[in-house]
Length: 257
Image 1 (cartoon, rainbow, N blue to C red):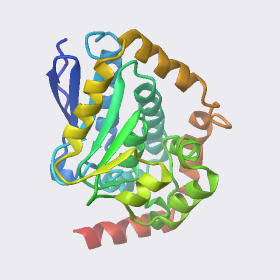
Image 2 (tube, rainbow, N blue to C red):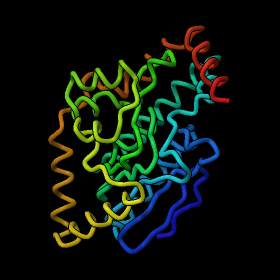
Image 3 (cartoon, helix red, strand yellow):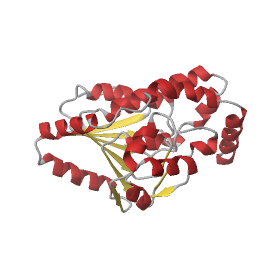
C-alpha cells in the first residue's frame, strides 16, 4: 500500500510488517498536534491495508518521546480552545491506534515521557530497553494525565499503582515497568527490535484470522472508559490553564534550554 508522506512520522514496510517511527528527533520526538493528526491519518490508512499484519512503533533519535510538546502547550495557555481541540485529536488517536486490526508493538529503545507513554500504551505489546525509563511528569508541570490514558493505565497496572505512577511523577526504570506490567519484556540495548521480530515470527505460525479476531474479542472484553473520558477530559484541561501552569512550564522550558 502507498502511504502519504507524514510530517512527523517515517514509515518502512517489509512484507506484512510496517515500521512506524516518531520522527521529530530534533524536538526529542515531543508530541505535537501535527503528530497526533499524522497518527490518526495513519490509522485510517491501516484500516484498508489488509496485507499488513504487524505494526511496530519505534522512534528516531535518542528518546522514544519527551512527551507533549511543552512549547506548544505554553502557547495554548492563552487559547484554551486550541488546548481542547488538541485533546480531542489525542483521544481520537488513542482510540484508533488501540483498535487497529493489526497486532501492534511499541519498540521503546529510548526513554518515554507523558504523551509518549500514552502512544506506547495503545500498543498490544511493549518491549523496552533496560537502560530506558518511563515517566508521567504532568503533575510537575501543573497538569494532569490526559489523552484518556488514566483508564488504560488503571486497567494495565491496577488502581493503586496507577495512582503512584501518575501522582509521584517519578522516572520508573525498565525492570520496575515490567514488574508493574507496563511493558511485557525488558531487553539489552539494541535488542528491542530483534525481540519484537522474534514475537512476530511466532505469531506468523498461527492462523492470522484467529489472531486478528482474538485481539478484537480481547479489546471488547475491557470495561468502557468510566465517565466517557473523551467527553470530559478536554473540558477539564481548560480548567487547569492558569498562572501556575504557565509558570511551571516556563521554568521547565528555560531549564531545559
